[in-house]
Image 1 (cartoon, rainbow, N blue to C red):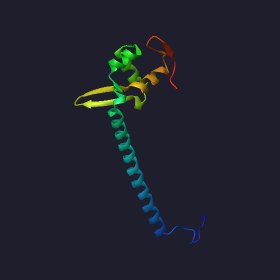
Image 2 (image 1 turned 135 degrees about the vertical axis):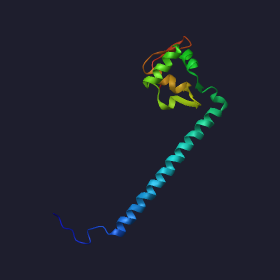
Image 3 (image 1 turned 180 degrees about the vertical axis):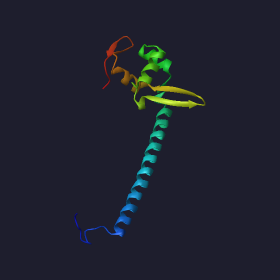
Image 4 (image 1 turned 90 degrees about the horizontal axis):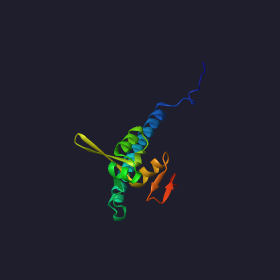
Length: 128
């Protein structure tokens, strides 16, 4: 068994100071995380309110028309996890939950598994 001199061991005061510092860091991190979450929500609201971003969030039927697939295919892809969290917005209305799809991000997600034809002009295999 190793023996340590008294100077090598942390004093109770040192341990107490260390614990206080860790607690301050935890509180600071929690505050920072809450601030970032609020900024994300504020940014999303501002982006949606921008007149140049009209209809950023699409209903499943609207996305299905753009992608030329059925509504049930869009729902199936969501359930399979094809869409990233940034592509789907979940809106709870009482017992019902509606899903909206980000016009650009959702198309990018789908383009990774399926070529997408837009306006009968060009086939897009993936977005950059």
